[in-house]
Image 1 (cartoon, rainbow, N blue to C red):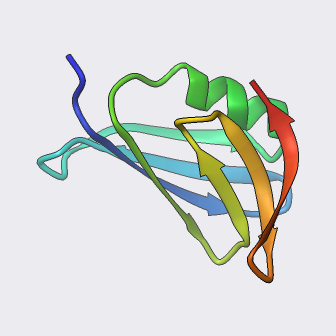
Image 2: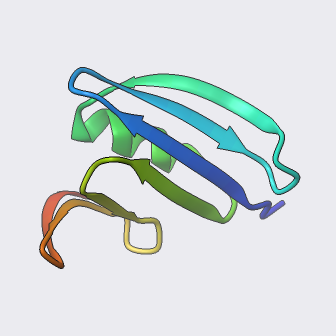
Length: 83
């Protein structure tokens, strides 16, 4: 099933608090990740469905269609890791 997932990331220096909600708003998976590009990418690659990601108070971007993860600064995206 290609169910939508809504992913909230609260990024801190050492860890990222993750909350994943389903389309009805129910929390389906809480997680805590290391703040490392490979850890984040591995986690995201393990998710299925239509992913909608938001980040709290950081300048970061993830494009699930291209699997690019980067930092956004003044409308410029610098690649950190690629699938």
